[in-house]
Amino acid sequence: MKDPEISSYLSRIKIDDCNPNLEGLAKLQDNHMENISFENLDIVVGRKIALNYQHLFEKVMIKKRGGYCFELNTLYAELLKALGFSPKPVLGRVWLSNPKLMPPRNHLAHLVDLEGKTYITDVGFGGLISRVPLDINVSSPVNDKDGMIRVVNIADHQFMIQRQTEKGWMNLYSFENVEISTEDISISNYYMSTHPNSHFFFHKFVGRNTPDGRIALFNNKISIRKGIKVVDKKRVDFGHDWLETINKEFALNLDFSDKEMAILFENDLVN
Image: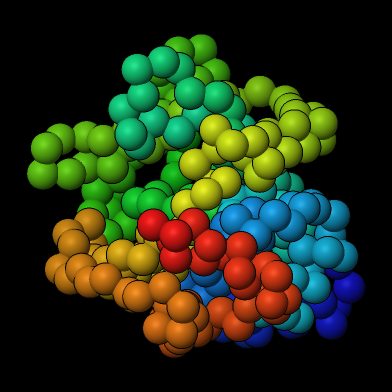
């Protein structure tokens, strides 16, 4: 990543400068989640999800789009490396919906070693993930402004990220501190972006953090939360109102063709 690209990236997430320490990493993660939206709309309209650097930089930095975990965390890792960090990719199993069977490794995040400690940092999870890097070897809960969150060791080299809710500790995703390959990431990305069984294949997910919570759009239902508490919900009509909402609330201007725009709403209009 060249200096002008670093400057463009930092400007996009509203940071002037960053040192390769825990304070810098925390600021990068928090600002990234507030200023670059999570969204899977390219998947819905049938675009190929490419993970090469030039494509991702053009999409997210130049076209001001968002992306889903494989896109956002892949690009984020390039910024981390350019700033002096050494990110290590890990694949996670998402447990949010309490699946009966073990879920696949279908989420990408990164580990960063700093001052003898290992932190997980993640800017591409579409839910209640931590705003701050978490020390994977410390199970004590941390307050990340949204509430309490923690990492617990569940087996050798295996960890679970959990969020405290009114009903107790909720599993978000597990991951393993083991080496993975570029091909592992490519396979997971291909499945999640092309297979009909992927929850990203039909449903539209858009979200971003706010200073005191998160705003999220799932298909045509928008929710606003303060911390982890949902304080408002409403329906957004597909079409003009929907596009206006993602522009206003998520700063997204879609570059879809007329054909792609028709695909975006075709199932909704039929139903």
